[in-house]
Length: 93
Image (cartoon, rainbow, N blue to C red; front, side, top):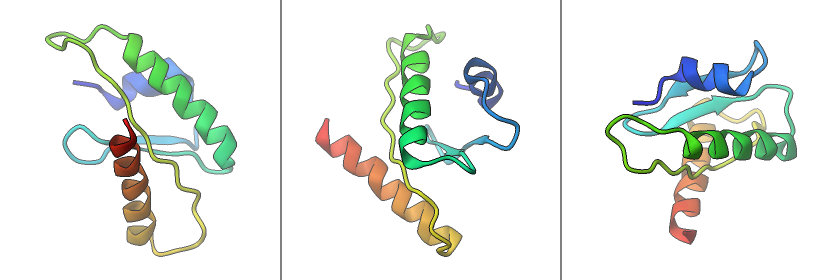
């Protein structure tokens, strides 16, 4: 099981950044004051770190992500749009 504290520690995220479990095997990463381009760099670094990590009882863990920049929309709409981007990434694989 991936623990969000391990991710924070591995990636040295800023204090205002946040990682949380979003159901099942999904995580949500909130990166305030971060552009989409910067977020892509951070998420790609996190992906590489997680994919290199040897998890107990797991053969190989892969990461797929969806990046959505907050545009003052309703929070549930924002999360749903980010989730749609994640699923789009899964269908491209």
